Amino acid sequence: MWDYTDKVKEHFLHPKNAGAMEDADAVGEVGSLACGDALKLYLKVDENERIVEASFQTFGCASAIASSSALTELIKGKTLEEAKAISNKDIADFLGGLPRQKMHCSVMGREALDAAIDNYKGISRPKEELEGEILCHCFGVTEEKIRQAIMENNLTTVEDVTSFTKAGGGCGECLEDIGELLDKVRAEMKKRPPVEKQPAGLSNVQRMQLVMKTLEDEIRPSLKQDGGNIELVDIIAKKVLVRLQGTCSHCPASKATLKGFVEAKLREQVEPDIQVEEVVS
Image 1 (cartoon, rainbow, N blue to C red):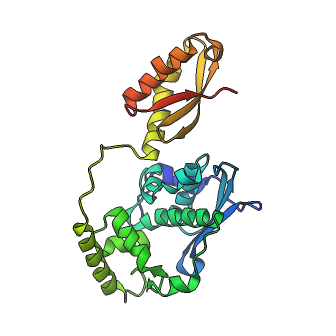
Image 2: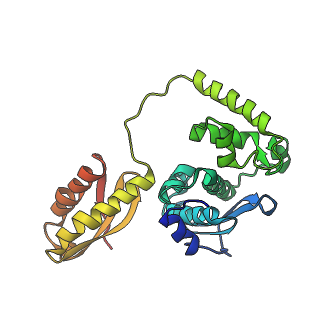
Image 3: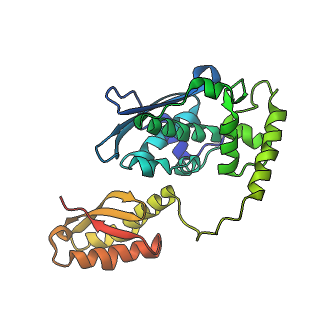
């Protein structure tokens, strides 16, 4: 029995944005019914390449449905470039984590997003090219997909590869090949020049959750004491877009409130270089 978080259960039992989209601008389809997991992702994109709607159809387990639901929530409102930066780890983090054996469901979501973005941009990949690279024939997993999962998630064992990609989870005849590929990729990773260490930063999901918590717990109660309020409109990288409400919306000191209180509090609680901008409508 898998140990699912409450958020996984919520998105499985009450999935967001489920269903087909007849007028989609882009569609990404990955997996297959024969393999037990399949996901079809639909995107509606505006003239600025911003995703205004996202929906999905998923065949699979609770983790697959929850991951698909989480993915659509994560990408709505983002540009295609911003959405492309979302990793399978971001999807799992949004759900409060997934059982390691179910991480392949988050990978499937990331792949569907890549496929949808390629579809929007008119990029196609010949099927015969993929067939020549398949390493696990039970689940149709290519060598490139395994290589990518190893590098992105720092996988160290064949069992990890199976958990993240399903490769090797069928007849098992490819396990030896997976082990050889794992050794090869990890050796390549060791030879790479060290990457300049970046300051520890937040993932998109972590930033969004912290901003929402700080607004709810510390900023909104203070504004309400004076008859005001604040609405979170969007978060684009480290730029937080908000709309002031109530007395704050027409207060002469609203700019000072925005920078001196709201932005200062978010910099204190979330990230020191975060910026806050007001949306007026």
